[in-house]
Image 1 (cartoon, rainbow, N blue to C red):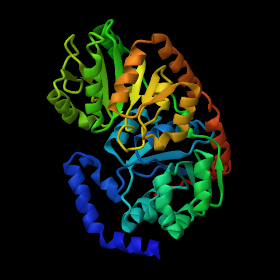
Image 2: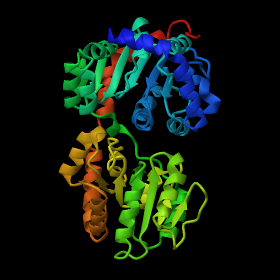
Image 3: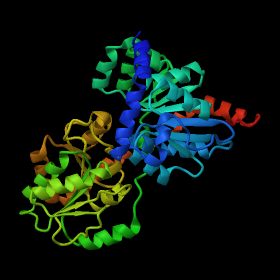
Image 4: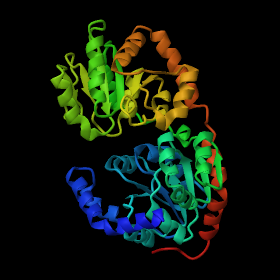
Length: 432
């Protein structure tokens, strides 16, 4: 009943969804050159042979699945691979980081006709859905076509679980799309079972399989020259509102730490101009990297509103606050700084990375702060204790390396489907 109502509503609401997408395009939140991909109109031809469709909603999910995509393409009889993501930022990162030969498209919006159009063109032979974004019309089309599908790295927060419990029939119907669900944690596995999932296992979190974020050697050398002996710390993946808290922390710290430099990386590069304006209104001297503003001795906040350079800034600062956690967003990936020798700070809102946050805290690799005042105090303590920074960084790295075999365990579970694809590759070419 709930699904029927949703399907009817999305059919009737299709014109409104298209208007909303056009509004997003005007706001720079959709790629105008590839806009029709969001409406299921392919921007590329379907390649011949068996095709694996990997759907990853945004940046975090797409980065976590890169090692798996790499292994798929390294197989003796490699399938074609299509990766879909829904954001402009994730598309740009995928353009830079996907293995050669892997295709990328924007994910289609969840309208019945759009879902059908997308699948009619791509005709995937195997579907890998990543983490937690369950779209009823797309999943219904997958079920109707009898496509084998697996939900990878499944995550279900307590808040989402409570929401799905209000529509248990719909949840069970969507989860039945997947012949197998691989959960990030036993807690998520239990929640999914309670919602009706049948075949479910926990083999670990794919985020542990990711490689360190890339460096930029020339830029790193240049920036280190500018930093000289200045004390510095990093506020990474910062969400709106958190830049003001980082700025307030800088104000509180700069007298005791002459020459202090705060490095600030917005979660989305497009936030840079607004964040810079807010910080300048608070009396801080800001240099924006995307605007080509130089880092000078007078710069207090170096705002790196660029794409794909977060790894560079984690390597420059040994003390890293990870954003999305002092506002109710759910946090960002704590393993990224853990792999790059950082002592980690985060706020209370880390629901999306709860098990990782717990492991880092238990090992002594991360510290939770309650608010902006707590952030300033924690940064001050670490600036004054370099040996503690080294100890925290070492502990964090150990946690990041603790599930090194998770990718092999995931591939073991996928082996029956992948072997079937390899057999299919021996048959007549499959093309649209």
